Length: 386
Image 1 (tube, one colour):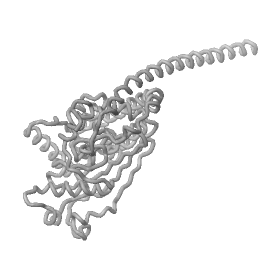
Image 2: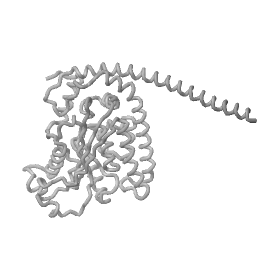
Image 3: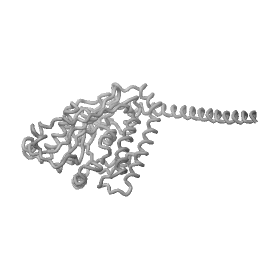
């Protein structure tokens, strides 16, 4: 009996070892094929990158142009595309898919104008705390700096004694706003706000997974360069969301608007648009900054697909976010900073914009979308250099 038992054990162990060998060989073959295909893909993409590097850029577009092309290395890029990008792409896809599924499940049967309560609310906030951070990890952001600057001083805009003299019935924000430099800004805001809704360009709808996430988060989509009537419609939607949040005392899915309306290279802060400031209700400013030794994560003028591949092929990336105190406009702001002919939202937006610029120690600029598009055309070889 003992000999039979021994034979059985040997056969069983041998079977498991054989399966292990087969699995190891299969994985080795898969890894080899995947690495070879990724290597070839990297070679093809690098040819396109070299063409971009050759295009002359001028200081005229300092808010949008690439300033890091001299640091781009073919060796680093090919290594990243071959050994990092495939696994990070899989990780990103899995994380975002699970996040989307959880958000959809948790919001089933819930009126999106009302905050989630009880266990659903807790799980929703937890989901938005964990999965966006995992998505950043999949993109190579192993470190994320975060500071809540509760002592930031708004006295320049609201008066010296504004903390004691300002009469407000609200201790919450109805919206948040920030500068905008990359698609990863979305994950940063979700982490800080424990969930948020966004205003985004219509093209995002067609981006795999991200478009579905946008819809699940009740995003307001708009067409860039649309008619005055469509712009007024979007503004009306923003105001309606703000009123709903105000009625809910700041609870629920707060609307976040990237104030500049489009991305920069994270070197300047551009004028903020009207939307988030139009009703004069309290706003939470968030300042976002990126840094990297070789490739700037700022999206600016690089095609989205190329930027995605380049970013996930870097060994590591870094971002930091600073959450400023709620900013609520008062009579001092309008009396001392409202210029002749301006609407009330203008000094409000200027104050928030300059507070973010001061926090990040970045200069402001009056650059426009048309300048960015001209810069992009030049960079992509569609227009002659100046």
